[in-house]
Image (tube, rainbow, N blue to C red):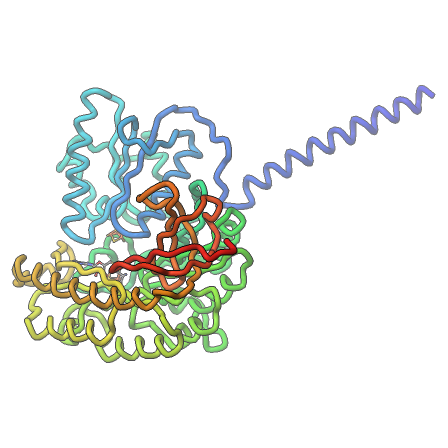
Length: 487
Ligand code: SAH
Ligand code: SF4
Ligand code: F3S
């Protein structure tokens, strides 16, 4: 009897230990299995509050998410109130001079906070950090650390003082997967997904290859895993990011069945449950191959919306910019896209006033605008960037003339955008509701698959859902409508 009791006790102890051990092992595995997990209960060991301000493009927005996640996991408290922050990080852009002036001005303004809070820290990260490096400490002596976009995974160490306060250039091991975390917002249903870093082109005006380095592609499987993680956490729309997304894989990944690696990736993502929409930016006209056009026709989740940066409509200027395509090629892509995907939204980037751009060159851009009828365009006035090829040329188109050309194109795109949006009047469109609009509690905003913004009166329950909306109003770049009855 006594022996039986001992045996029962030993068995109970064994099972209790086994269960505790298994639970512990499972917990540890969960922490390590997914590189995208953010810890639920970060240890707040420093009680320092961090605020990150983001300038520039979507890559920077995505990088800022990773910075926030990294710092939260290392024990910082995050705040969206700059006034109470102990550490302010400016994630900067260098693409035009104005972008740098803005961030430098902000760092000057922040310097005053050091008088009242001696522990207050200012960090410059991102493209301007890489571009100006050590010079930044001379421009503003209050800056505490400078970290380039290729070294962001070292940021927590740098803030701690466990490394030099200038951290730029290529790291020993470049963070290849970019998978050191992400922090999703409450109710977030759309997310950026980085598929590559850097750029191998040498467009004469562009600073990006200097700031972001050469092209590096994430393994396809990693991207798909991250998309699955996003889907499991409420994301319904992903936007693939890269300087030239349709060069994904370059020569390192093989074509399969005549399909480029980028299209192969789109097919894998299209097959994932819960992901309902896929977007990408930016593609390069040079690589806009027929398999991508076919993908737009065949993959139901690939949105009928393409941002195609053309920069100029003049072949002479395109050649000077080292953009390896012609206006004919642009017209050909647009025609193929429009016949494959009716109502496809096409937007672009343009630079006006590139050195040597004559009135005739500019008229070529205007006539390309008239032919394509973009539904949106970002028009930039040329800004010389030290270290680029075109910085050696005389910036001979004056500010006034650049502004005039800018206004002419803006006027054109307003007309074509109005025309495009008006076509939806009276139609019912599918809209992914993203959140509250600025104009009142009960007004929500969302996007159609062809990237038109829509305002609608609806309840918060609709956030993250794709709902049918009948369009009954439009302005140049925005639609408004009514939720169709059953919703
Ligand atoms: N990789 C993308 C562009 C990234 S930069 C592409 O190749 O299309 C974003 C935009 O900034 C560019 O499309 C271009 O229109 C603009 N831009 C880049 N350098 C510029 C400069 N020096 N002056 C004015 N605009 C510039
Ligand atoms: Fe810059 Fe040209 Fe590369 Fe785009 S493709 S990032 S414009 S160098
Ligand atoms: Fe983006 Fe500006 Fe850098 S456009 S890649 S943040 S220079």
